[in-house]
Image (cartoon, rainbow, N blue to C red):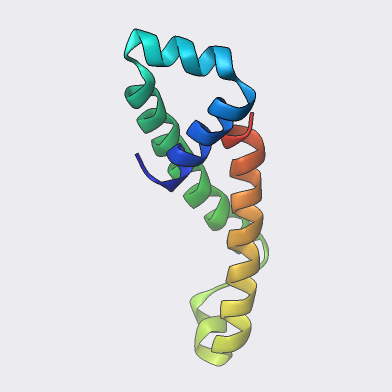
Length: 91
């Protein structure tokens, strides 16, 4: 279970106690968290690619102005993580 699965586990423990207890007692918690983690990673990668493409962040920009490219990619990654958190981790 990666960091995103652990975030979801923390969310379940705090805000969805009955779901957490049900998964824990049925023995399905680890498989569930691994699946959520896998889905979240895939969603994050897709979101980063889509946002970067829509904003025109390319290898050419990286070659011309690395600092600007890194800054923009950090912004893209932060927005993609916010999307994943909203739609999957804390839902």
